Amino acid sequence: MTPTPTRTRARSRRALLCAALLALTVQAGAAAPVLASGPEGPAGPGGPGGRDCVRTERPLDGKARRVLDITRKAKNDLKLNSVEVRVTIDGREVLTDALGESMTGVPAEPDMHFRAGSVAFAHIGTLLLQLVEDGTVDLDDTVEQWLPDVPKADRITLRMLATNTTGLHDYVTDPAFDAELEAHPFRQWTPAQLLSYPYHHSFWYEPGTSWSYSHANYILLVEALEKITGTRIDRLVRERVTGPLGLWNTQNNFTPDIPRPVLHAFTSDRGLYEESTFWNPSWTTAPGAVITTHICDLATSAQGIGSGELLSHRSYRTLLNPGTVGLGGASATCPATICLKQTEAKHFGLGVIVVNGWVLQNPSFSGYAAIQAYLPSKRLAIAVSSTKTPTTPDGNTAEVVAQRIAAALAPNDPLAIT
Image 1 (tube, rainbow, N blue to C red):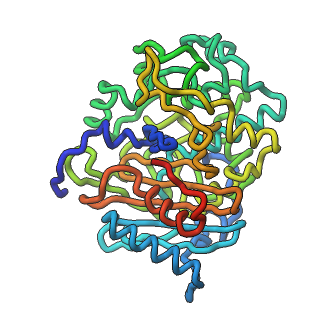
Image 2 (image 1 turned 30 degrees about the horizontal axis):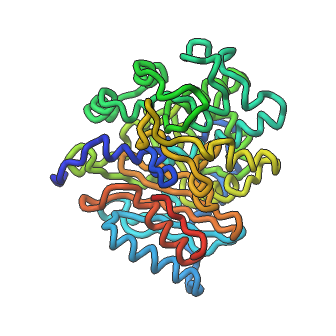
Image 3 (image 1 turned 60 degrees about the horizontal axis):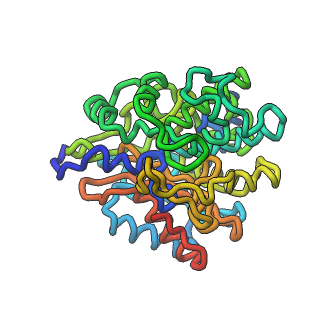
């Protein structure tokens, strides 16, 4: 382990599962949907264990070479251990590649699996809208019938949980939680233990009147959806989202294990550069929604979610703006750094982030960083995953790589997250 300058856990986690919520950097990520314990996909290429996610055949055409050159330069500039990238236009591959190493002497490969954190929220948001389309629930149903013990349950709706407008504190920014997680990265957390932190605080604002990111919202949303449907969230998402999209290498994990082959991660979060691959991710969201994926699935997810493939036109419009635009901003009870202003250009949708027309999610935690981004007007999908060396700068470096690729392929539509 190589000593490095101490980087406080709070700062690194401030980009966690939802790392940069619209410029609005959110914390994390991550937590970071999807699942896995459900019907498996087809065997062979495209199915579990299939080698369908491989480097683009050489020689590369001009556009693919340009993307690869940008990715190589970004890897060097950011001093990354690995970068995995896949870009598609209208579903057709532009480039799939992996640069650097998973571990010393072990090259990174496109089919290696990594943690995908808050990508799960995009899947769960789509699932919720499907249940609304079915008439199973209404977005504005309050949650007291399913979650009667939640504070202000008679004023909190499913829409508020999915859009981060409840006013609940985020346990990830609680110093007491932060200290416990730093000391015990392998700890297995329960939803009750995680929710105890925000429940010790008063609400930032009355539910529905502002916006602030909180991992607690998706823990509660998952609990509600499981009670509403009588089905475990991993099975629900597999049946209704990841299965239909063909994401056979995207799955929930109830333990810290990651399906093989594994892209290993390293971090300096605790002051020493150390391996963090199998740190326990149970704190990131609800059980059943702690996912891993690979770069090809991530690009497919970007397109499927970002295009509204599984939704009606009406639901897709709600996904992109469920009423969050205009919310947020400093108030007497909530600082501007917490209640981030939601604008037309940059805002949180229903489980997704919208930035200048791009639809994305951007997990970043425990040494892993990733982004799935889709630009509907160009049918352009960009997926990037990155891991760190001891000298990698703070922040979600996968975002930086994706921003540079976007600037080359869609210069009039900046992926300006931060």
